[in-house]
Image (cartoon, rainbow, N blue to C red; front, side, top):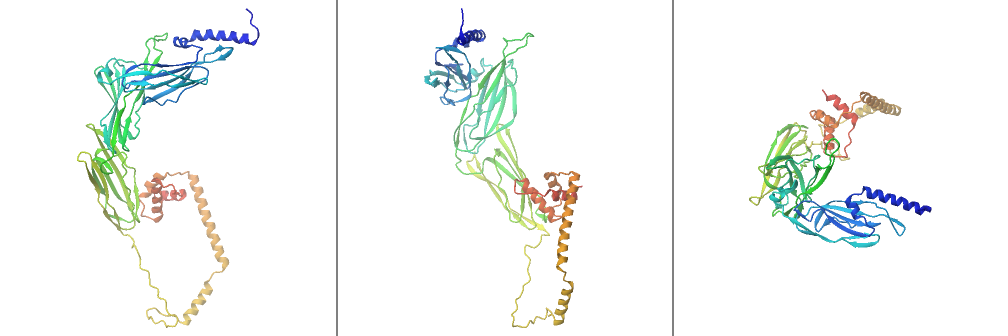
Length: 519
């Protein structure tokens, strides 16, 4: 047989490529090879236990394929999706074509459903998929544990709560004993849209019957009213394929199996009465002193403890005229005590002033879910006396304007004679400096200041000292009443620490002050 021209060479290469493709294709690839434009739907299972993952594949044959955007399937969220293209070259009427494109999605239904028909565009024409019915069995202890090697389950201790009320959600990963995994599961925590969430403690591992259970707990705090769905939790587990071994007898293949938990519906209602917190709490507060020296700090400690969540609570700030107020970040500890959420909130305030001042009272409202009433936590007001504080106002001498036509007759203020006035004028004339002396003194002063700062900067550069502002604050804080310079620097450091970005710290002055007081 003779082959002439480029077309013959291309056909020969195509035949060789086809033989190579069939030699290395899997059974499923050979089965689906077709010249016909078409679309098919394949599902991993049509009957599952609620929450288990189904793998949906929409497979299209054609030159150019456009799949629909699928974010949920009949109300069930799509967990993962990706598109895979397998190029298979063949001739149709002398034209080289490629085919076989697949959109692969995973989802975890929790009730009977039907995968709807989807429109797929292939080479400019629309093709429809066939709908597929899925039967979902309720998730019970018996059918989950039966022959399942592994499964995920999600529970919430409350299904109906108020805004701000604490919920504990628990994820259980159950593995059959003796199961050999290639590595640790790839875990993705549940979606908690509409809730403040925080993991509670470390994972707990224990054994029940012939299964190993891993347990993770989350604290949820609803932010607004409405109907919400939390979950699912997801994981991928790498199971060793015992059918594939290398020449040394070791297993060489891992089969990754995706699983997902059920989802939980939670109804969040509006609080019947407005309050700052929801739960049952007590408050403690203490002031270290009510008498203090000027520019020395007075420290107030607040501690709230009780059943409920304090994770997103913000204690109201203090603003007092003439008083500098500093505060640290609140420390919040949350744990479980007999399946009840228990929280502790601690915060410290420091007040610095030259004058007597009053720390105003604070009142925090708490909605008690048991008594369904609003109760109050109160911090009393405190009057603080500052020892040795300068007077708030000073009396200024009264200046009396004399009438021009009246003789000054106050005998307590001696009048100057003409002789006194002449002597003063003569002295003033003799002592008054010349203009060039004033200019010379001014220039000399500028020169001295420049040289002082220049040598000072050289000294610090040579020393290579780069004091951190947090360390400087600790050193200077104890000497805040030694000088106004130290007091101003401490106030600036505190303000910058608390987030005031407008504050600029003079590093040269800061290092001078630190060197002065550093021991």
